Image 1: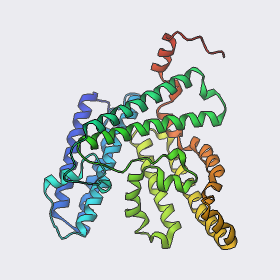
Image 2: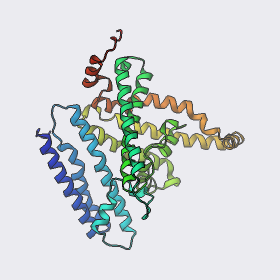
Image 3: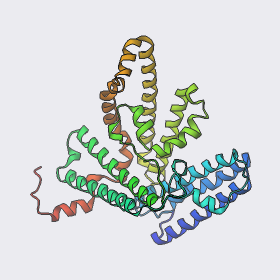
Image 4: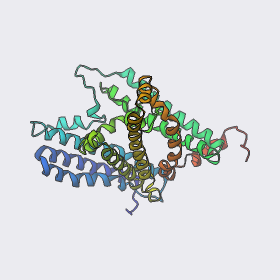
Length: 353
């Protein structure tokens, strides 16, 4: 365990080492290629992955854990972009890149998802709308947490408690996405939405392939699924993708946030969903092979996907308790001291025991 130091000093160290990792990555990318480039990037990425651990450990406070968790996101984004840039350089005639191009590639947006337009002007009005939309998501989440704490949802039935936590999570995730759109509009750029209405998913495959973390999915597709054979070795690629995603989330939720009690829950959640996606592929192939007339009729009438909705709803409810366990250990939504103090001040009747 790292010794506890003041938060300002820790953030200064963090920023300095982050800048050092940024400059070292540029030097490796601009001066090497092939295996040397990969070997040169490995220690730099190791340094970057350790940066969240430099936030001072003060009795495992919720604030410090959340700070580490949040700081991991831009660092992981930086690593993905560097790998993406390395792949682009490998197949490009250019052997060096300018520092300006490197900075542009590592802007706050996902470059591979940008619909760039040199003539595009900053959209101040659109950016402000996204900003206030993000504020609205945060306020909605805070209001629901307040209501949930007052009515003691954590003491209610298991499905209600899990659904409430899922709603909190999606509201905060959508707030983060809206703030990223706010930045891109002010910069005169447009990116693919991070989430594509995940609550309208009709199956596990639809949820992960089309609606959840759309921008990050492109990286997993290029760097894991396709190199392992793509559609020709679909099951292997699916399980490898979910394994990699589970390990990355484990690092973010449990290692970077120093939450050892939660280790294993996120990984189990992703592996279960990977198995179910593989099962969906097998089920559709079996249905097509053995009940072709029904399969064709259902597909033609767009009914086939919706046959899986009850199963998907049951699976999400059953496994979300596993997936959210690590997050529960970092922050218990219904036991936030500020929320309890606010409820004590508000002129509300005491909720009966």
